[in-house]
Image (tube, rainbow, N blue to C red; front, side, top):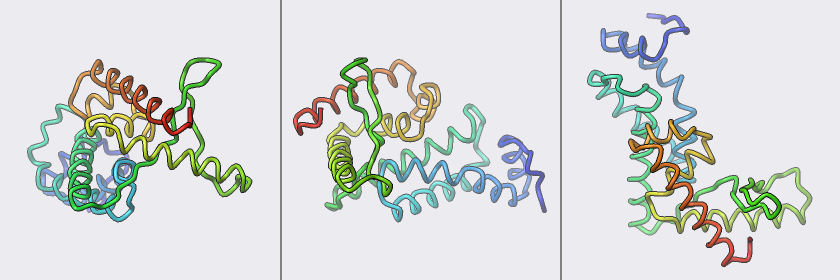
Length: 200
């Protein structure tokens, strides 16, 4: 059965729970890319990210009949993918895999005192600048890997996925104050770590 593309997520959930499995295909189509970006930003592995997204949809398929709608479907799916990515990261670390993270970067701007993005290596850069940015990018990846585990998802959702504080709070099931304080602590730690490497 073909579904109208203008159906809301809530309507798709209702369709699915009424026996129309095509509704779940539409849910996957609608949310797969964003879920993949979240998983990849936390795991830095295409294979692991794809595996986690597949597991996210499998769990969602099994649990959708119990979805109460206390949060949006998007937030519910993001919570699943974030938790599964954390579990996968811990499993990788226990077995000794090197799992990296990437981020556009956050360094303190000397003029404004705020934080600015750092471009990661880009094929369009000159060789000298590309090498410099690659070194900076590697240092940022290293610094993020040193962050306490509870801070990594906040950094990823905010600086890689451009989530609002409210979206992060709903995804991680915490309050906005906690989100702000974790981000503040993450920035402090990243600056300290990068300073030790001579980046800031």
